[in-house]
Amino acid sequence: MPVRTHEPTENRIMAEPAKYTELPSEDENGLPISRYYTNKRYYFFGTDVLRKDIEKLTFSSSDKAPEEAVQGFDLSEKQNKSVMAWYTDKDKNGLYEMTIGQDKGVVANSNSAYLCCDVGQVDGIENLYTTGVKDMSYMFFQYRADAPFEKAVLDLGDNFDTSAVENMDGMFWYTSHMFSAITLRLGKAFQFDNVKSSVLAFQLGESSNNKILVSKLEQKNFIIAPEHNCVVDEAGFEKYIIVE
Image (cartoon, rainbow, N blue to C red; front, side):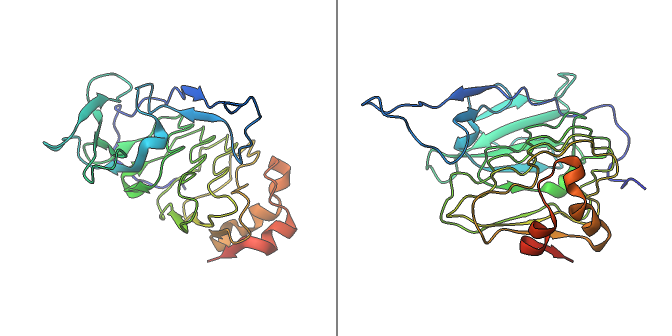
């Protein structure tokens, strides 16, 4: 049964257009620059704010921006201001605290690709309602890519509903690298019932200390995941998947 997470509403967040800029491929001497992840850097919903400059992305159950907000955006699909975003720089470090807010919680678009990609941290995930979402490809791609020496935890909680999702390609791709391990907890509502493709979905990165916490109910789906090109085979299951 799908998880009931929000009262019915026609208002929801728009799809992320995933506009990006290319990082230089060569240095000033014409020598190639080696990168451990893609050379693309993404903008936040088509604005001039680069996602790499967002140190924290928070989902809120209120659409009211605080007085100290620097700038606000209408992120509603209908452009009726039912879903708003705003950012602050409380610690004056040039990195932003971005908030996406909707009354009673943010209703995700059926296309939620790239929604949380390339940001430093995600908070308030319990205020993001994902029932009915079909596309979660690259949703957390490059999460915490710029915090190489910190251990990270990404806990989706127990209401992150994926019962309708068909595409998980690259969903958690490169959420860590060799200097930064991540513990990913998927929660009780995370399932694979309708998934048709999940290429590189759980290829978290280069660290040997990455962990994925899965429910006992869904553990079997990680073992058979190669049917969806998920690259988590039996050896990978034994290596870093923990059953709750």
